[in-house]
Image (cartoon, rainbow, N blue to C red; front, side, top):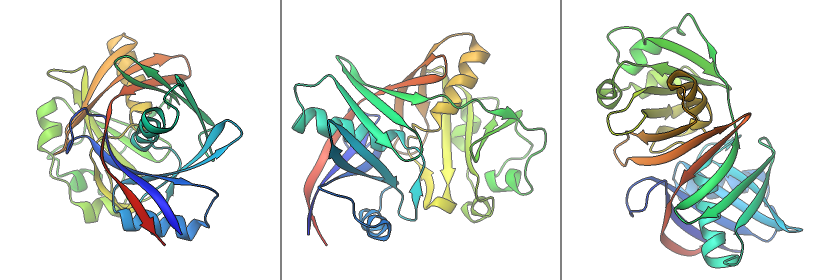
Amino acid sequence: MQIPIFHVDAFTDNAFSGNPAVVCRLNSWLDDESLRKVAAENNVSATAFLVEKNGHYELRWFTPRCEIRLCGHATLASAHILFSAVHTELKTLRFRTRFAGELTVRKDEDGLSMDFPALFAKRREQAPAGLIAALGLQKPPLELWEVNDILVAVLGTSYEVRDIRPDFALLEQLHPYAVTVTAPGEDSDFVSRYFAPSYGVPEDPVTGSAHCALAPYWAKRMSKPHLRARQLSDRGGELWCEIAGSRVVLKGKAVLVLKGTLSI
């Protein structure tokens, strides 16, 4: 079996930065274990699988270990491939997902805009045992929030976020939680980093799904609906966020860096 694959760097307009994703176009669905094995072979933080049906695309995402419920950068990568190589005449794409409902992506002059569900975190008064040590912090975060198995640790400055040296073995013990750390930005409204080692992603370079929670938090705190965000991983990346009621619009760019065929 031959599967067309596309390696795309998302949330950047420069190759070798942003978050790499692999997009696989299928004629029909493979079984779940085969999808996981393909994702493990690709060995990036997320592989997107697409099957076209009746004018829309069914979309699923896998890390090298498991299927995930929502993924921003692999959705952006998928839309980039479809807009640039398959449906060049379209301005909007519709994706149907197993866990996040229908997602739409719009082609704008300055990037691709993704309509995602907003995630409204709840304040958590006490950190799980081991969180502070796992993040290598000398003191507890200023605030701690939780939503959908994501812990959001709020720090004071972007430098604190940049300088974190996490213990991934300890972070893995916090499963099912992934952890994002965030703070006000210097040249952006806010910054973040994201860690999910128990899902096969020690540090995700740029995490669209986390911004479904980060954008509502910072929009409320800053009293502004439009935000510029930067993720301070080694590869780095940026995106623009807009709060629209119960939805978040995430805008970014993407670059194709490799295409080929996977034989299984």
